[in-house]
Length: 234
Image (cartoon, rainbow, N blue to C red):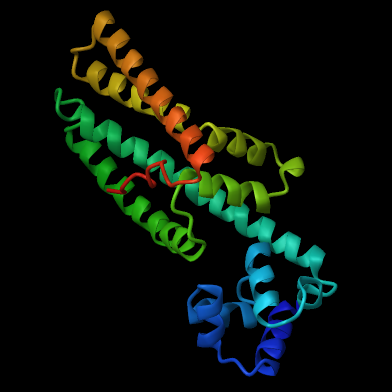
């Protein structure tokens, strides 16, 4: 893998320091350092920017390393997909337990409190690399994550990747479904769930999903960041 070496050689030939190239590429100096040491790989957009700023071409930077680049970016995207899925599961778990604790003792028993403490610790282990990844790749919105996975995963070779792409493509609808399930679970645990209330919860979730879909379409139409960022982590 010589992509990093080629980037460094072209940078030095252009008379630039790492921090200068980082400023031109709008990334951190550490990112440039990681690229040049082949610790991480720039995506195709970054490669185009680097090639432009260094007066060369993408082909000159990647040489014969295309298969290896594809393999490493696919592996990196799969690791991130696992982190994303686990983070989403812990987020739903936290929502269910916090909501359900308001309606009774089902989520406040000692055993359940130990389970929550364990889940919180496991979630923290997931959040650290998760946030480092989304910050390093500037993935602010669900759509950014979807585009990243679509671009870097070998979708044809992984059913899980195709499922993830389908979910992220309609993330607002799935968010509504998960919120409905969480609310219904909490109400049921508290013994206050009635058929009319269940219908009201489901209708409210569907309305929020439709609003989210509409905002996504408006964002795509006008090119503005209408979709809200990723939900805050607890």
